[in-house]
Image 1 (cartoon, rainbow, N blue to C red):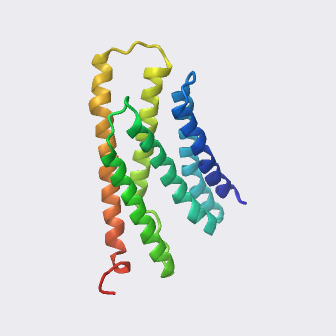
Image 2 (cartoon, helix red, strand yellow):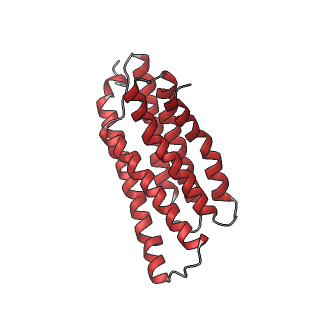
Image 3 (cartoon, one colour):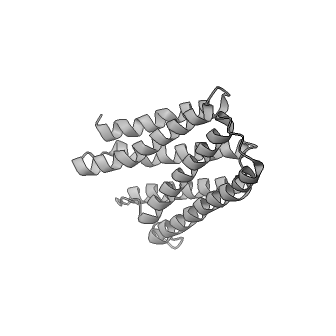
Length: 194
């Protein structure tokens, strides 16, 4: 197994540990979850670059890399929906999940036709913004709950009630835009007249 595939596999293996520290109330558990999520996100940035630069692109990597990204992001957002401390409803999660299923379906149809659906700029922007948003939320949770800084509610309330929801909805909007671009670009694969 080459290095990019090992990095991708590492990302998948980090997901259960991320979830473990999100759910188990131990000292600095949000900080630990943040470090794990950030490390997993860094492997996402590295594996594709290394694979392309060194000519190590494999079918295993083409399959697992986007799947690992989707599982990592959806796992984090699902945890946020369950948390009382984060103002995130299920609607953004449903929209983001639906887009991921749609793009995966398009990739399957494209592969059946011998076409490789590469990640476009909007897809990369969506992934980067969503991962940075999740890292920011985890940092905020760590700041508020792992450390005793006594941040006043005049600071926490606007961040909890405005900033975090706006970031999540921006991620959702980018998800919709990138999904629509994929759908438009590969509409011929699902044209009902064919």
